Image (cartoon, rainbow, N blue to C red; front, side, top):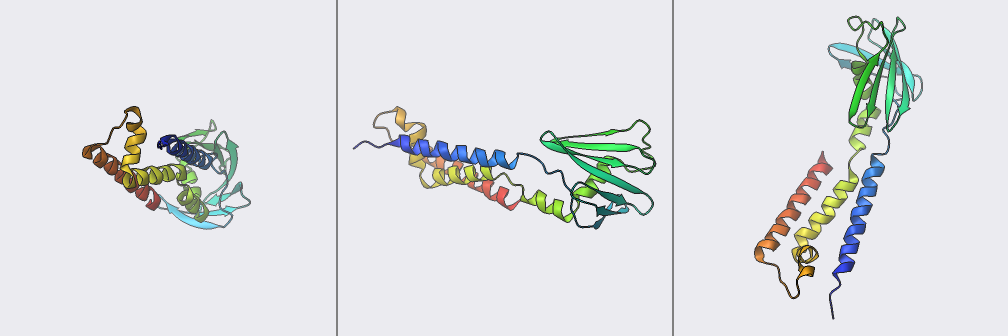
Length: 197
């Protein structure tokens, strides 16, 4: 009776595809909302108090000035526009790993904090901290756990799926099996680190 490595290969490909789908669904769109609970936080020696009006608007005060903010969806990310007491604005945009800021023409950067500072104040909300911690790359973690587990537990199988099917009546060397196990252990360690961080 002949072995059927095609079934194992197909199962592995399907699991990798599932992992990629899970990973990309976690990266779909950054949330463009703030906490609904008022909170205070210190930044650069100044204590800021945040008073949300709803999920997308609210005010921030530093004890001297009050600034309003408004979130808006922007591509796969979001932008938040801060309006200062003199009517000038600063818009902070985050789209994936790209961040940028833009101001209205007469913005006084010496008088008011910039939008990056106020944006970081909003990110210090209890809801935002919880949201940041909960966004893990589950697809990558699942793939590393699966591939690492298979490499560690069944190095002959991974060798056969990689090389053995090409050569009739071939057997893996001890070095090839050790390499497969070592790679599996490294994958499991990386997955464990990703789970803990």
